Length: 235
Image 1 (cartoon, rainbow, N blue to C red):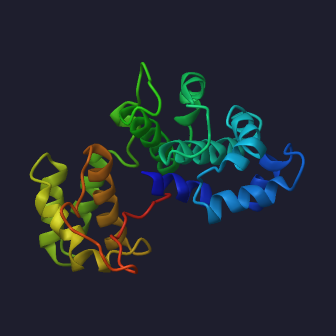
Image 2: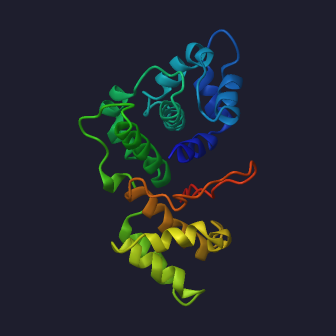
């Protein structure tokens, strides 16, 4: 989930970072934000908390004034919270005041932010009286994810598609885990219809199944070896 929030922050334009950082004094706010996002992975240091947190918290309260800055700042603050960074605000009041605005964000960004709050709630990083609803915490609905898979039948090896359709219909997710963790997933690319349909299905499984981990029990011991994460999929 932290990965999705980082990806959402990575999408910020230069102008958006400049606007967020405009109120930072002293120092170059835009450069500090760029370092925070692209070098530190959205995890604030104590120095960042003193210099940048106020600007981020302010931008995350102004959805009508600057929607892009609102989305970027919220993503950074949630990612920091989940990584036990130096940000001191638990974002409880942000959730209370702005959840209706979060619903207006494009599907992938909306899901990332709702999942971020949900994960923070489950991990005790914020205590929400009304945690995110499942229907708003997914990039695609289960029905749409299944429809996309059914449209792929006949275009490639049908077995992985069948396994995913079964998993999305409430069946066993272990076989789907094996597909993602195996070599099949190396051929799923977000820039072609088949790969995007498959990735969308895996993303839905990840978003609706708490703790779903296709690499469970796998040790990654080589420094340059890491699990393949499910890509962030802006529509």
